[in-house]
Image: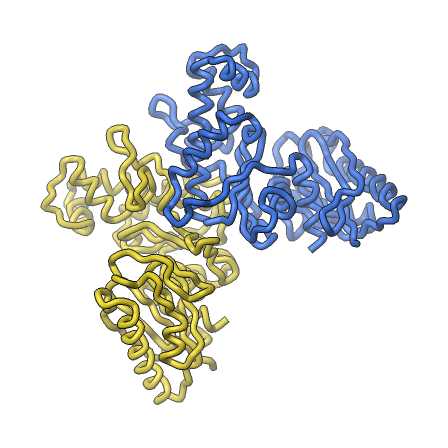
Length: 309
Length: 309
């Protein structure tokens, strides 16, 4: 069986594994991303991680023959470079990931954005396994997604496809004004349906700023806090409405919902799914809506799949 | 050069042409669709039309060797059947278009929904020519679209992809309530941005019901009617906002705007494009937004392209 390395390179940590052609994970490891040290240092550390996994795999008789990467940032998947990235990883923009890793490891390599890698993993082995088209939408720190068609994510002409958090939501208003969005515009899905947006709405509408994060708002809701219940149910409705509209546009075989909010319990999930189904055109009424199944492994195996096919 | 027949089978008329592999139109013709007579009668009449064009092409030395169809309705492009259709064409649902035409004409055939055919034509020879991905959105009696990737429209798992009029629009509200949509739900883009929605808004907000159709509202706007200007500018903003969000999601190389409203003058167009660009993520800011270039020929040549590639 062929073996390759899959790498999920995020803003805080870099996870990697040696993955077999059947999707089995042979060995895995993780390091902190050197997110203050720039592209060269990050590639150096990533190569050390992959090399150590390759050595461990070799002890089990497996030869790693390629490396696939899912990386934070907007990634030119053809050139293997970072087109842009936030300050979460300093000096990441411009890094030539594939050339840098191939040079360090002597292996062919490929890279896509980490959200696409995540969706590829779920499409291959997770909640989308066995389908030919799957739409993944992740609700967490931001709102992002990927539409996978026959094992290929739709990357887009500028490699910016999948920014499903940045279209207008009727819920993303406060006192008649569109809520500011992380992208610099306003009124977008992400501005009402992300995790931080839930906490921001709670505080904006008079809740205690002592609730430090999204998790605290969910905990308050569990204890019966009515404002917490309101802002969560509105965020869930906005999320579901957005995904339902995407289903009408893309008609995927399955919808995979991921991110921290997908794991935040049935109150958010049920509100999200109810709103999603309320949008669906009649022929699409039975579309399966599944929770992401692979957790943090999704992006690693999805990245591996880039160099397995 | 190869020649094929392309057919655009709509609710009121059926247009057809003999199209060369280079996109040239050799001969063309048109009949009224027998929209009250059912599938068999429609296929009979379509075959007569294609046969007459084939004979005229033969007189010029061209042999038609296949037929491609763009048809109204939800079309199963694999089976070549009509999955569902509105009462605009009675008893069209269930018709086996490809088998029926191949039997009558002795030619291989293929079919897709007419909006996809339209987009294929624009992607091949029109406003999207030379691009590898194009998003067409048509604003007319309804709002529909198609995302064409490397000459293939994204058809969707239930062949319902491209229903871009059926996602939530912040503009599709009246007195705090979502406007009813043709799909049976409410608050969708089509409910505020279609042609009929413009006339409905005009009447709903106190304008004279004597303005019989969308065209009359545009004429009133040209004469300075403030309510007409308001409802048109709002519809244009809703249209542009919707398309801008789709661009963020799909990142097409070019956006093609089609339908009656795209040809209704600069007031609608400028409002639409301004709202569209206000939505765009920074890497997408320069996406070209082009008016559809082929008019009624688009769907005929797009249908022909189905059997040319």
